[in-house]
Amino acid sequence: MTRIFTTFILVLILAAARPALGQQRPLKTEDPETVGSGRALIEAGLDYNRDVFLPVSGLRGNHITVPAFGLSLGVSSIAEIQLDWGIYQKLNITEQVAGAPLSDLLLVDGGRTDDFGDIHIGAKVRLLSETARRPAIGSWFSTRLPNAGNESGLGKDVQDFASAVTIGKTVQSVRVVANIGMLMIGRPTEAVAQDDLLIYGLSVARAVSANSELVGEFVGRANFANLVTPGAEDRGLLRFGARYTKSGVRIDGGILLGLTSYDPEFGLTTGLTWVFDAFKVP
Image 1 (tube, one colour):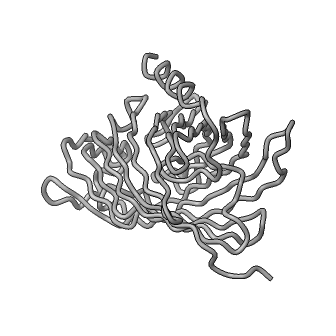
Image 2 (cartoon, helix red, strand yellow; image 1 turned 60 degrees about the vertical axis):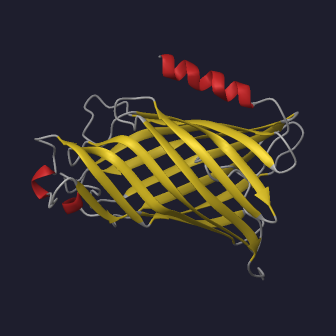
């Protein structure tokens, strides 16, 4: 409860100045505004998470992803296509829990394991533009492809699908973005079975100068099933950081705090974002 209370306090502190539109790294909450017709957004970063637990494989340790790559293409003024990929990931193992569902499939040598990351392919559409009285409203969806394997302990060899309603509103000097939707997680131990979870997020952005911003968000998921299978547990994360933009390039850094026993203890992220005119939409 203390961490959840801290989450809302930090989010409220950030909501005190003019907004930052088109929210990007280091946030995960999707803004209903798109990158723009014919424009491309490329981002790359490094993510470090301490004390990560993977309940499906039973591995616990410190996790690194590099580069955390993202690409968004504006196919119209209201729609974009997205691709996200943590190209390389490594887990320095601190504990291996016996009896995990896929622990028998592990081919781990020593105190570390690595693999490719899973690719996420998705899109979002702005359905309603923002007005003085109404927030912008959009739709977002994404599919996670099973690129990481069971043998490394970093993958599940099943697909996941997520979709959400995206809402964004500028109130006086504050940009507030909210997401709520559904996550369908495939069960790696059952051929035709899935878990359905509620997903949600809330973010705010505060500009402290013409080029720099402070950002924060609270994201999570909830499983209301009577029986919660490994890998489908409730999660909650608090993320806050800063962004600095110069000559079309944005530098960011952030800190992550886990709010449940299944989340990382804390994490660090840093990266770059570049937005540019890429092509003409007919």
